[in-house]
Length: 397
Ligand code: GLA
Image (cartoon, rainbow, N blue to C red; front, side, top):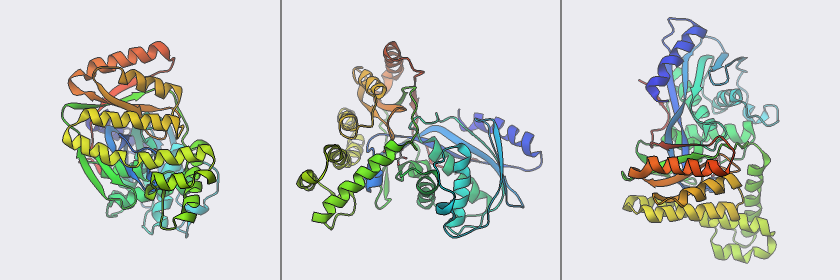
């Protein structure tokens, strides 16, 4: 789906629900694929995501009251709430329990906006997207950032990419209940066309990294789904915190695992259980791969960039242990193809998508061959698609 094909049906649905004469606008935010730097963002490290040409679109008009009336075309569902009055820390105090329904992300953004001191009120909204859900392509961050972009436009709030990305992360951490980092929301707001984004998750400084013209980025959906709010993600996060506390007792200057090197980690080996040590080793080594891959992409050295992706996958499989047999299968299948420089799982893991760096002129045969090979071994509804590096959240003109 492209922006132009999306705008027509979205506006039509909006008119069916809310009537004519309202002149709605459309905000869009993209999904992302991460090229390398996995599980480093919540350790204040580096990541190299790229926004893709699949997005979540929100068609909206502000209302005169405090009612949020929101329809999801993908879930064929309408929900209506009265926005509670602004109270200090409402996001954190909202009744506990894990949330992951589409409407939670919408309400979460409104509550977070109020928490941050922004004046917001009621809205009419219709949502539609084409980012596969639960596939590791950040459909939820796209939803949060499309809603945030719409809310800023509707209530005259200045759009600031980093500030809104932080706000989206707070929704995940404090309202949805996932201890995630900032990568997905930042990619959904600050990405530029034709580029990946090298992001330092400590300083939030980012640099666009052009994708070479002879390279294709292929998303390979294993067809296997995960739930991010499941405990495994938070467990990995907790393992990183445990290691950090042990290392800090010897090296108090260390603030996050991003500051740790292999020698420091080795000194703490005795104080950590085997699995926790392996998790930390992944983070320490993975943290520099985005910086190296950015250099390689800039130099046009696709072969070396691909090697980094392979090393990242091996580390996620063997040390961080967040891959699964389908992700291993599709990545190996891809790497065996002559046109492929490298492939790896992308996103949190446990299912979802892998990503491959492929010779552009061979991309069609690559996709056909890998799909056939994977399908011969795994019984899951897989799909491969080439994606274009796209821009972050915006209002459609
Ligand atoms: C999910 C989280 C991100 C990041 C990745 C793993 O996508 O939302 O913050 O931690 O997993 O790299």
